Amino acid sequence: MEFSIKSGSPEKQRTGCVVVGVFEGRKLSASARDIDRAAKGFLSDVLRRGDHDGKAGTTVLLHCVTGLPSDRVLLVGLGKEREMGESAYRRAIDTAIKALRATGATDATFYLTDLGLRKRDTAFKVEQAVLGIMEGVYRFDRMKSKPAETKRALRKVTLHVARRGDIAEGEAAAARAMAIAEGVRLARDLGNLPANVCTPAYLAGEAESLAKHHGLHCEVLGEKELEKLGMGAFLAVARGSRQPPRLIVLEHRGARKKDEAPVVLVGKGVTFDTGGISLKPAAEMDEMKFDMCGAASVLGTMKAVALMKLPLNVVGVVPATENMPGGNAVKPGDIVTTMSGQTVEILNTDAEGRLILCDALTWAERYKPAAVVDIATLTGAMVIALGHVATGLFANTDSLARELVQAGEASWDRAWHLPLWDDYQEALKSNFADIPNIGSRAGGAITAACFLERFAKSYPWAHLDIAGTAWKSGTEKGATGRPVALLANFLTRRSA
Image 1 (cartoon, rainbow, N blue to C red):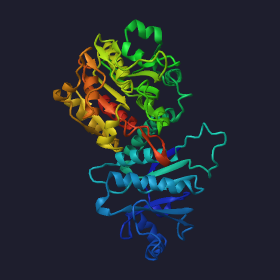
Image 2 (image 1 turned 135 degrees about the vertical axis):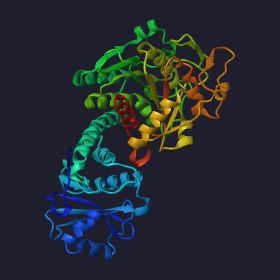
Image 3 (image 1 turned 90 degrees about the vertical axis):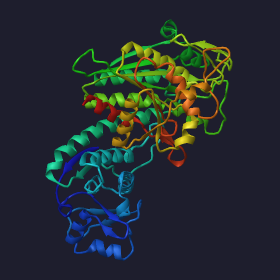
Image 4 (image 1 turned 45 degrees about the horizontal axis):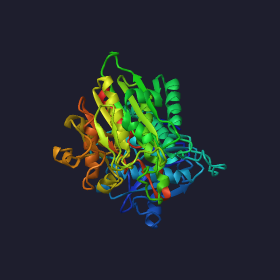
């Protein structure tokens, strides 16, 4: 997809389709009014006839409008003008791109980017438009023998800004958004692949390919090396699978000072989670291929970082394995020794994510990091708490939590800060080991974070539980690529 930023009158645009907005109450946006004047009131006539009332999520496509050089005009419902905010804006972009995909237009000019959004600048509107459009044209059909036939693909999009002085800001935002969109696309592709393809070895290969094509440094550790390191918790999860585990390390060395402390991203890479001996119910178990979306988001973020050439040292760490039942699988009641030396009583083999992450968090200490952020589809309790809107955020440092919350707000890939008080640690007691791998059912997402915190004492650390945001179910089933945008924004702000 090619994006360009321009400033100019909509009625003069020679393009496959001009996209403008209509508010509820049949009120034309400023750009729509310009077109209406050039078309001698044609748009107003369409609204008066009741063909469009401006409700959010609705569109009307007009062809060959008299007085305009463009082939089509797409009217997009914006909802109530006083409620025009970030969510409504993103919905308008999504609605527009879905409608455009049903046409034969190969290029389009969006005049939605000049809509007024309170406390949001041109850069935000352009970035969200690029991300929304790239999300709208995304398709995952590589596993189909005969991909569905589509109309001519949209290849070029022009985004309008209100003033010529905004063009440079818009171009910078579009370039940044395209880098993030590439990262999101990689994360979605990896998440959508079936588990018989996307194995730990496959993830390692993807990381090596990223390193080769984007100037990153890659290291992959196998089972023998993990044993030498004493990663007993990670290896315990891997025992039931025929797929050997991998610890994947990607480094972006972009800081001006080579020895500058890096930000380390740790992504849970369970390429399929049956629950192990604590077997999951059969219903929707296919969605457990998405249990590596934390790993996918780390790889996607590393690609975005490389494309943006951020002047920052960033390390991506992915412990990758399957969690399978079998004769050699870890059992409830087994006790394992982690890389940190702490012992863990495994009461539930389906609480495996924290077991592979705890050893990876200990591994991260060697970098003497400025901060560590782990990303994991960790708990069903997180879905109950926050649904599918916000990512759960926990941290041992309030300043790091604020950074991530602000990055989520800036990227509209939002996270919500939850407590990590010492009171919750009381749920993690074992009669036989230093710590159990699960606490009580109450506050399950919090006690899971409390478990991880015990392995992150030597640096500022945050945990993103993406169990509710990493993928969608139902008719739109598939990986979302979240929270690549949040992480990319967080790292961009750090580099500045």
